[in-house]
Every structure is written in structure tokens, then in C-alpha cells.
Image (cartoon, rainbow, N blue to C red; front, side, top):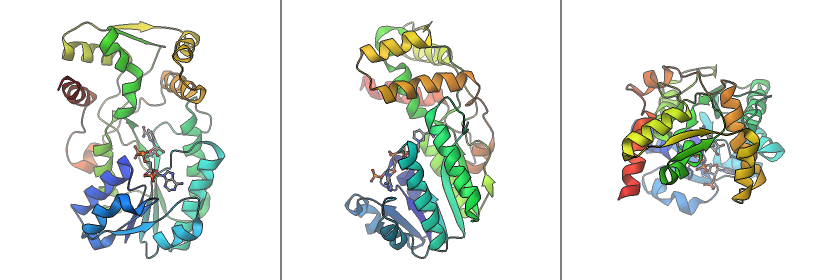
Length: 288
Ligand SMILES: NC(=O)c1ccc[n+]([C@@H]2O[C@H](COP(=O)([O-])OP(=O)(O)OC[C@H]3O[C@@H](n4cnc5c(N)ncnc54)[C@H](OP(=O)(O)O)[C@@H]3O)[C@@H](O)[C@H]2O)c1
């Protein structure tokens, strides 16, 4: 049985939906914190069990009979998040899973300017030390994560942000389809190549795309990191979020998210969704 954690979240749920298109529902199990939210999966024949990375005993029950476990990272940073992933890895091993998959990230590094990358690097190290067969999915940066960086510019006509580097923005839907393919076809031992859309783009590309799509000019304005930080703080942005946002710019300038690869396209059998398509759909949605 393939077990998917975080199946009430965006990526986990999309992976389960992709799996359902390719394998019988009875071969899929989900480990979720709230079983009520997964009732519709249960109705389809998916095994739904309660599992929380903070409760190893309950998690073992949720992982029972696992041939593979897809650990969707919990999104908790720092020691607590690493503890979550350690528990999930140890429990998957205990449950006898032949393969443990983990949603890591392109640009993973123990010394990254972007805090989640340090966290993913620590989890990859846990996987490497676990002695289990594992696949670390080097997911591209979610396209959805780009929106907070420029959405204000749609109103103001100015995309104000620090100098940036190219980022291979990638959709949840494409990553979910690729993940299902990896689970079913048993591809990749160790780290995957980066699973990304076809190209990495910069903020000035986003400004031009948005400008063209809305039919109004959007000017890219480069400010220093300090000025950007002050602007965010003056808007009441919490400190942790300020560090995360600045981290994206610093790490992207370092080239950490620039390496697009054709692996995702090969896995899903078609060209991944481009950022232009994502933006077009989002803007059309906003206008309705
Ligand atoms: N590639 C990227 O660019 C990128 C960007 C942002 C985040 N991420 C990472 O990718 C992960 C999945 O993305 P997403 O969009 O699907 O996020 P999401 O919708 O927030 O889903 C996260 C899932 O993690 C589950 N979770 C949280 N704490 C848990 C715990 N203690 N035990 C078990 N499960 C727990 C949540 O459970 P509930 O449904 O019960 O809340 C949720 O289902 C994120 O959590 C984050 O680590 C990647």
C-alpha cells in the first residue's frame, strides 16, 4: 500500500488524486491529522487513518502495511520540523516501508539564505543516515509562492523588490503528477534531479508578463535589502515572514533556484505549466 501523509494539504491531496487515476483506491492509504477532512477519500475506497508527526504510535497505525510512504514535509521550521520528519522516517522504517519518499526542494543546502532549505538539507541527511531506501523529491519552487512577491504591483504598477535571480516556478499540479509517477514507476533512488517547470525567470520577466496580460505598464523597481525589509516591517509583516521573503531574494541571487531540468516534463509526459499560464489564469480569476 502507498501511504501519503499531509493528504488534506494542497500537494498531498493532489498526489492522492493523481494516484487514484492510476492505481486502485484500495492500494492507497492516507495519514492525516483530521480524518473528517478526508471523508471523501474514504468514500472512494482510500484507507484513511489519523496520523500526526508528533505521535509516533498513532503514526505507526497510519503507516501499517506500507510498501512506500510519501512524507509531505510538515512546513514547520527549526528543530520541531526536523523532529517531525525524524519521527516520520523512523516510523516508516518501523512499518516496513520499502521506499521512503520526501518532499524536499531545489536549492536545498545546509547554508542557504532561505531558511526552509537548511531544514530540508537536515531531513535529507536523516534519510541518508536512516539506512532505508529513499527518494528525495527536489521539488521546484511552488508557483503559488511567487504571488506574495508581486501581487501588490498589479494594483500599484510598480514591482518593488530587491535584486533577484532566476527561479523555476513550478505548479502543485505538475509536481503531484510527477510524484505519483515516481511512486508508481519506482523511479529514482536518492535525490531526484530538480523537478521544475521548463524555465527559470526573474522578477522583471514577471513584471513584463503581468503588464502584457493586464494591458497596463508595471515597472520593476529594485530596492536594497534594507529598504525592502523596512517596507515589509512598516506594513506589519511578522519578522519570520520578513526573513523568509528576504531569503528568497538572497538565495535566488545566489542562483539556488535557477537550475530548471527536463525531468518533470519526462515524468508527466507533457510540458509543465509555465509561469505565464499560471499568471494568466490567476489574473482572469481576479477579474471575474
Ligand atoms: N516547493 C515549494 O516551493 C514549497 C513552498 C512552500 C512549502 N513547501 C513545503 O511543501 C509542503 C507541502 O506543501 P502544501 O502546499 O501541500 O502545504 P499545505 O497545504 O500547508 O500542507 C502541509 C501538510 O502538512 C501537514 N502537517 C503539518 N503538520 C503536521 C504534523 N505535525 N503531522 C502530520 N502532518 C502535518 C498538514 O496537515 P493538516 O492538513 O492537518 O494541516 C498539511 O496537510 C509544505 O508543508 C512545506 O513543507 C514547499
